Length: 303
Image (cartoon, rainbow, N blue to C red; front, side, top):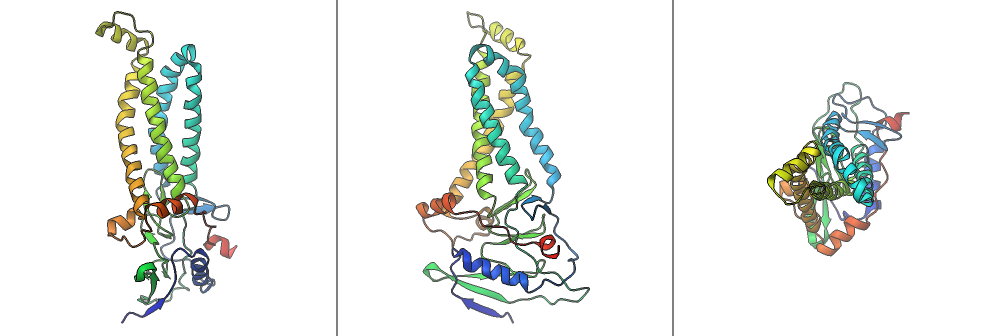
């Protein structure tokens, strides 16, 4: 039979939650490495991290730099002669997107310390769970993770790609090669938002640049001659960026909806809607809740 322990613990009390997690971690310091170690690699006391499938970063970087290179080849020279100040927003947006990109890809998403098996001992499945009473008398359970050997905190889930339990796990992003969780969700929203603005700016300015140098009267021949003078690069930039903008902007709207409802992608898939505090409180929580410190992980403990 399952062992159940009921405790009154608000999920929004950060100090109590961290005491629980650190206590779980301290109970199992003297141990050997698990047969299924985490696939993430971390340095600088776990501040820098490579998630599972990090090699996919190169593909997403190529998708990002491709329109940027096209823009630098054709549009920037055109604007430099006519409207040089339009280059400044391009550079600012490019730098901001890169900052959020690297921060999201290589930061710790909120990995929870795991317990490790001692030697080759056999471990029985721990079916105990801790029931937590939320506001409005809603009961949630801290379930046991059979891989990490811990009672997972509320809203925590195990990522099968990185093989880690992540605090407030949203999803594993294949484009970034990292989990999206409590510690990097804001930067993830930042990259989605500014990438949408960046792509929109490329589309508008590339489209405007197509009309620079067109000979009047406006005919299909004059359009063709103008595009030919730009080596047809700007039409290619527009054709590439329009569907990309549509996809990224749709993703942004999707996450705006989830923030407004107080849910994560993982909770939406599992249809768990018990953490909604209302539209205003959800946004205050997202915007102003501080990023928590990193939990001590395996390499840090045994050094």
